[in-house]
Image (cartoon, rainbow, N blue to C red; front, side):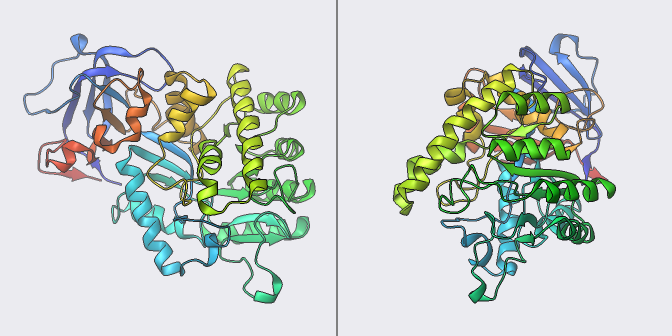
Length: 434
């Protein structure tokens, strides 16, 4: 991905650096050749060249680019589980994934971790983004997911003779789990996504208290993945599934819904980040009836919402780490609504805006393993910077509306926002350099 050339100064607003520290009034961020050279009070800014490009924050907020830590680029208008794998042909899903990536960047998300993708589309999407063929967030790819046979992600009956190969690799036992990871190694993924537990969406056979993988299968996945330098995450709602994942050595947990003291102690001991992805539950409860969602499913989402919010508050209080991201791409939880997750954590869960922003920037970068490059505004880091028209600390809902984004910078290059739409450049010509 190309970075900007020369100097760019972002000034005239409060700086929220992503560490959780209080905002710095009248701050400035100086960018040199795509990296941050200075962050601090505008009054202490070192002399800058007259040729320096300037971006006026207009009294708003300057913060790190956001990180969507549970991104499903191939999900689009999903109304039933079957829509995830057989609604569209893979060629069209690829185009949809590119459109979703562009939208995420336009919403201020300069980085993302895939939480699973049809076939290995996200691997090639990442390559296209890095080579500037299509716009999108810096991406970590997961490719196809892994689940036990008969588990949450195994819904196509055998008589259809179509299997689940495009979306998920189904395993029976540790040997098949190892073989599945080896297939993903060949696909070029970075994260192995698994399904240790069920979900409210499948109340009859695989609800949110059901285990969908054995401890032996999970151990085999982790051992094989770590041997190849890959990281492992899992859809973990049931307490026993969370415990099995932590004991196996998972690198993150998705959801971490139903926690007890023992699992919390394991989580803290290993310092494993959790991505709760909770706004999806509220959206399912609110809009489920419109999509003929059975009451048993809605009731399950209500239990998951309450349990997940309780666990998230507890993790934060205990000093654990949380990332922000959600299952966007469902009909009632569409792509483009990513920042509703942040508002939800402030207004429903009870987090402060600064804590929520830290989760969506610093911790998100840590989950991607790129905290040395992105996630906070600090000298030496890539200039992935978001400039918002308004005080995000007092009103985090400003992030929900793309019209409030003045500038989305990625490596110092102006990629989106009102200034990009108006043709304003974030840097002087002659252009950019790799």
